[in-house]
Image 1 (cartoon, one colour):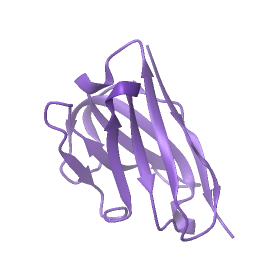
Image 2 (tube, rainbow, N blue to C red; image 1 turned 90 degrees about the horizontal axis):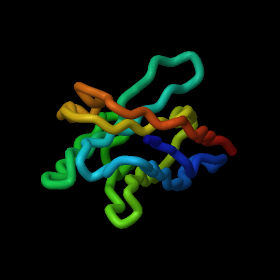
Image 3 (cartoon, rainbow, N blue to C red; image 1 turned 135 degrees about the vertical axis):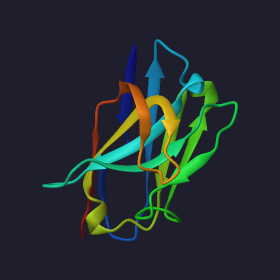
Image 4 (cartoon, rainbow, N blue to C red; image 1 turned 30 degrees about the horizontal axis):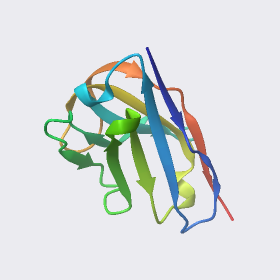
Length: 125
């Protein structure tokens, strides 16, 4: 059972980047999925959440609403986070998680069953 985040890298301010969260050993569609990040010296911050596949409701934190989009790729057993309009303050290690109970403010999951390894996003000119 594994959850792997990928797609991080260096991007200029105002640019875009897409992160992927791939699951193996379990069906990601049975779970709600959330994205988190932790920047230098900061606490972990919940960014977005999508409920299990039968519902697919999405929720976003205020800091990313309108810029980030969470979605599923059912055939690939994966999820993604499309990030547009990136700012230097978006620099962080980004993590995905699978579980249940999306918070409506996008801040995460009430229960996390699987954590993915992080992927570093650096926004800098």
